[in-house]
Amino acid sequence: MSVYDHQPTWAGAHYDPALAGGEVTRLDLYATPERNGTVVTSATPAVRLRPGVYRFTLPTLAPGRYWGTVTFTPSAGEQSVTDTSVRLDLPLGQGLIGSPESVADALGVPLPLTSAQRAAYEQALRDAQADVAAYLNRPVIPRVTTLRAVTPRWAQPLDEIDAWPAGPDDLAEVITYRANADGTYDVDLLVGLNGAQEEPLVRYVVAHAAESIRQRPDHDGGGRRVSSVSAEGQSVSYETAPQTGQAGALPTIDSLKRLRRLTFQRVVAPHRAPWPYSSNRAGWR
Image (cartoon, rainbow, N blue to C red; front, top):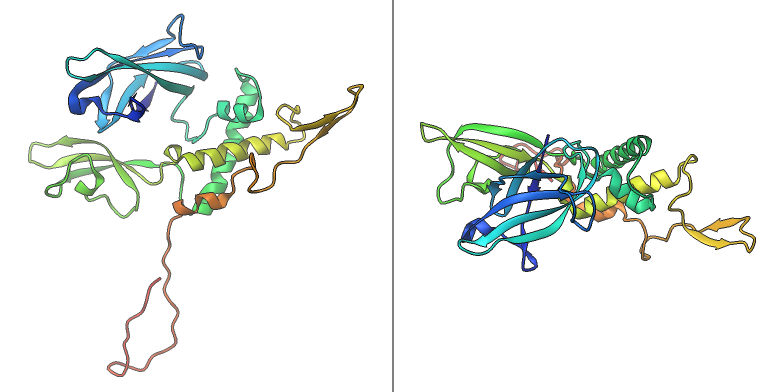
């Protein structure tokens, strides 16, 4: 069993139907991108986590790619509409910010994946994530923590992180909150960098996981860049990867620098004369 958090899309934008009295009612998953035929599974109802985000609980399904539709009513009294933007690579919640299927797409490997392919692609994703975490000086998978018996700040919406004492981390978001009998709240927070929600980070990890698979000696050649084939078909030449800055080039790790954790260190200063002849304050940077 896993959960899927969905942001409804309507009229070309993310939309929160609850603000107009609407509701998100149903998720249907299909085995093909045409989204027709037999429904593999359905999930209902959706739980509103915060403005614009609704959570579905999914039953356990075979690993692989599924296509889905989310049904919701934009506002009270209106007819329901269908959001067809859902594409899920299951299972979710495995500590990966990309999926083996996305690596297969980058390599040009057809789906479904074998167990051996899935295991190799998952390891390549974890290796790429480790490199990114070292560069960013922070994990790329957030952790869930609970603040208990806390009082919100005044004049702040309770689903915003600024309403609560979030702790020392610089990134956090509210998952849900529960009122206690004494007027305090228990608040579930997602703390740290949520790498799966950062598209540049996901693209970097998937691209470099795919490239590491492509360069392996035991790779079968699927997805390699062919530059020429002899007339008899007896020899094949492969292109090198595009250079940095060219179309199709791998993203560089510098594209993620805005996500780096800032660190502070004490400024080393020469010895000063005793106060009051000079300041004895130390600086930080």
